[in-house]
Image 1: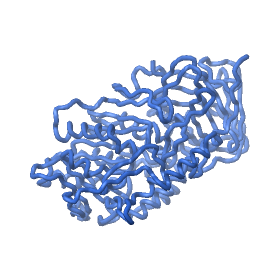
Image 2 (image 1 turned 45 degrees about the vertical axis):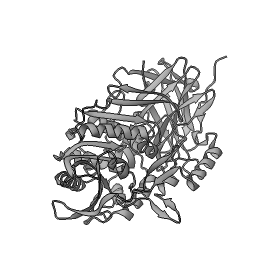
Image 3 (image 1 turned 30 degrees about the horizontal axis):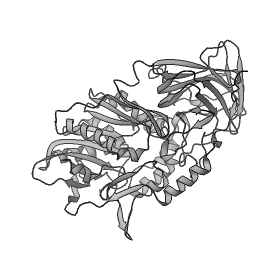
Image 4 (image 1 turned 180 degrees about the horizontal axis):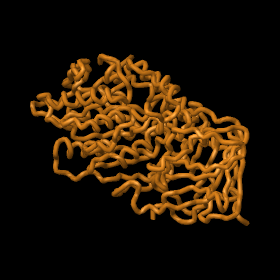
Length: 561
């Protein structure tokens, strides 16, 4: 008797929610964050003045190792305030509330001088580096009015880098290091090529604000972006209101394009962290940066863990240190591997960590799995016409591929569909790929500390399906987001959807499950949902997926032999 697979699913109702919520509440009350007091003899010059090219004064905290020899310097640029460090109150350490709200599955440890998402000065000083935390223009104690993602901000940080390189305590070699915005800001600076900047280490930072965060697939994100705008307004005086700008620029027009760094101009060595656990925010942009930068010395460190727990752990810091020792100190040590690849079996089980030479892997066997009747993903294209219809807000269409041999899927995926809609002239499609084993759904680490994520996800607004033919490749479709194409009732149109990169192992008996819905695939609540991720809901409508001889609907997967 053939195995039956679900044709419909409700992935927002996965089991284990109560147990996960309880663990999340425990982490809110007692987060696994460990702060150690900085030594009393720490050498630090707080709020040192750096006058940039237009006369505005920026303020920086300079941490220096003991001794008279000049040292290489590591710069981080802060939009939230460089002085956002742990404080001692009522006999205990307090720290950024994000560590309570956005769960980390592993411990996070740093000194009391560690700014938000920045390197720990005490750790780096002990290894012979000066650390400079700078408030960007308009933030913290710096003067002026700032503009996030702007060329002005990049020029300011250029001037900070050159100021550092000219100081008597600096060897003349400067690097940059930091997480999230402290990573994003590095791209435009490096593209300007300041002479003292010898290497950068952007640790999970997107490269295209429209594609990667504000409107992935053309679907508006209105959860994290709202919170982030509040954070930046509290910590920074700006000339532009990004919330107002996004309303004025719903398409990826010249305003959005002006925020994108020219990655090809980056020539300095770069170690970038590109995780498989941040599809809602940084993952796609980080891999795009690695593939696009002009540097001949570029290296990528991948993982599927939590952002901050990984950044401060021993293995990641050793990778950062070896990189800077080679390119800032000039030590005769081997370069990092081109690709440090981490493959997971499940959320908390690492199957393999190995070195690869390129990304995507050159030996990738791109295989197509076709949508067919009875909820089956088939390795064989069928000539028989078929279709499945689902309500955009009530359930997802599901297709399952049974795994019969050991299977590693590593790299980006893409989905090609033929779609018609009744009841609306546009819908947003939310796509996910899951792993099932022994009849159980297997969760993975995701964005914002969400520990019940899928292998990978993708988004696509149907009216913005036009492809950028110059940038698209067979495994990775890229859309223009410039020309809306509303749907007519019953019209069947093709659409391609990009899904983020992943690295997952499957065993015989496991299943690959493809999900396609008109709503978020995870609940949005803060206890067992993907909070704060939230997307503008799609109209209530009936969506039909079609396949057959003239309409090959398929999931393209990167199989590693």
